[in-house]
Image (cartoon, rainbow, N blue to C red; front, side):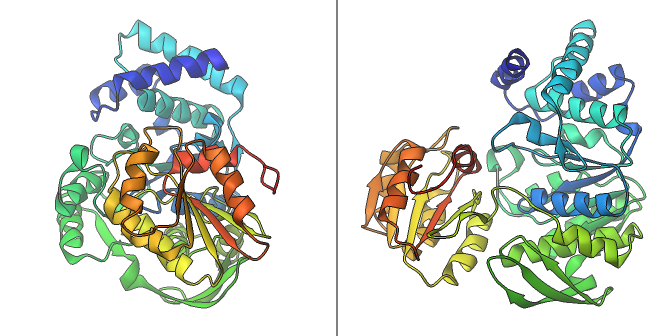
Length: 416
């Protein structure tokens, strides 16, 4: 297994190439596994993973065999590819890698890490004869490796500025990239409310003879009550009922409603939808690791994600300690200015992938909060946070999915 992972991660040095030609060659060489199951394609800036998880769980509760393909992973590579909530086995990864590598070499295909991994997911789903695969876009949409599928329904969660060097400098440019997942004669469901972006989606839908369904126009939701265990909400509009989720944060209710709307289009019963929403767990998103003190991790890693996190943090009336690490390609100043003033103590650290050095992050953080410590090793940073925290305090680890992944590898208590 380690040899295979070394080979796959070795492909990362060739970078992330946005093109479809090599991916099309690869799936053709594999006899188009992506055509052997129904799929739902999910793009967007934030909420792709959670919406995918909600939808996969709903489909599973409805009796379907369901593949789920997401990225990146938090702890183990196997997390990226699941069937009915169970990670692909190491043995299966080895077998599929041998098959795909052989095809790559025979056909002289220039493949990247993400293309190879996507082909592996599609081949696995085909071999296991899944009924549905919920497929999360890796980056953008137009030239993303996942775009070789022909989905039943396309979902675009929302659009905000991300990966601007690759996808474009404006929301309009990024919207055009993501809207390119829209295929002929499909239903497209979105939670986006920006009229300029919606005009772009509508224009693409008209060209493709597809129809656009906006969550905001179809469903209105209202939070009935919420705790650290569960959120209960009611919806009105196309569907009128009450639902519960264990995922925290108001934005997760919006993701749940998006999955609910798609599930309704697939003619899944309300009872199964309720079960699916309630039973969904998605690691690293406002995930509670322990209660006393309250320790949570959240993978917010861009401006939109931080804004959602800020809404949640503002509601917590406790002493707050933040363990913060941010990747080097992010909007540091904006992210820090929103989050850091809400905390009594900041501990700056580094995740395992392209982190902003603690010294550089420290310079920015000090503008907004003077109570700062630098501890480069993330495990030691959390240890320090737990030493500083009393039983009724709040400790949050955030700023990077890679940092969250590092922390989830460790067991949490006072003696971490």
